[in-house]
Amino acid sequence: MTTVSPTPDTTPVAAPLTAPPVSAAQNPPPSMRLRELAFGAACAAAVRAAARLRVADALAEVPASAAELALIVDAEPVPLRRLLRALCCYGIFEETADGKFVHTEMSRLLREDDPNSLRYISLWCTEPWTWEVWPRLDDAVRSGTSVFPEAFGKGFFEYLHEDAGESAQVFNRAMTTSSVQSAQDVADLLDLTGVSSVADIGGGQGHVLASLLEKHPSVQGTLLDLPGVVARADARLRDGGRLADRVRIVPGDCREDIPFEVDLYIIKNILEWDDESTRRTLRNVVAAARPGARVVIIENLVDDTPSMRFTTAMDLLLLLNVGGAKHTRESLVGRMSDAGLRVGEIHPVNAYLHAFECVVP
Picture 1 (cartoon, rainbow, N blue to C red):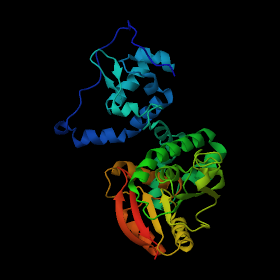
Picture 2 (picture 1 turned 90 degrees about the vertical axis):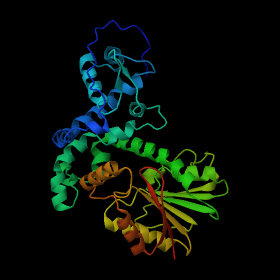
Picture 3 (picture 1 turned 120 degrees about the vertical axis):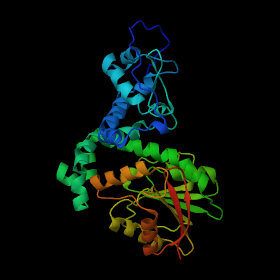
Picture 4 (picture 1 turned 90 degrees about the horizontal axis):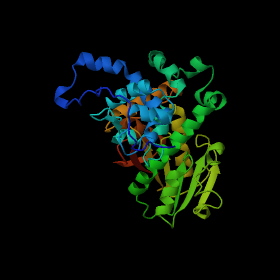
């Protein structure tokens, strides 16, 4: 995408409309804060609009006016300025004294070329179906089950792949982005001393596995996930990839069977389905593993984490779309113990993930 260059801007500019930052000592009163929260959908919609318009990609390293940006993103300059003004209130972009806009740390994360980009994750969290299910949260709280079948006439993943192809693509890109970004954190955390074989259970495209194999050249790897998922495995793991000679790619469902023994099993961000699916997966690991095998379970927590607003929001969305849940530390340890695992140390992976070290007795 073309970005703006520092060309003169002759468009009349009104005085900056962004209010000065509010310090911690000047927080709004509870009545105003609740009003702001009730309008939270406006913030989410503004982030989505900026991501879809690719405003962050259009803005280069020089200040640019709304009129300049509007030419690039094919928008009207006055509404675009209103959008940018709203985003500036949340620290996404910043308005200069002469009414132009510059990047902030958060706005750069909406650029697709940023190595830590959250563009697709921002789109995924605000897909059209989300606006249909969030207003039904009270129904989900009453029933304790997903509202998706009632709202759309079919289950979430069935709807996604049959009726919402664009949303399915956004989902795949978002999950890939998230996995790639956390894979190195996992590889840096895990000590593979004494490990000659590792399996990523429900490992998606295998980004975590690839990062581990690159760091530990003597280790063999296995990737297990549904056939349609592993068909799109990381190129490093597929035939012709630089890690392919050290990898088995196994199509399958970990809720049904895990047909191999390894020294270390990794289970990352998949124990958020219904309780029965979680129990079956953990029991299948215990049944497949030899005594003394390590099992590392990596999950978001809804307690004891610096990202509580993020993880609790994910927890509620899981309730709405699939009837699932994120775990507390206690609930996850309970599921592991019930499956027969001996739980050891718990380590933070990053600001939003924890790793639970377990051993098969």
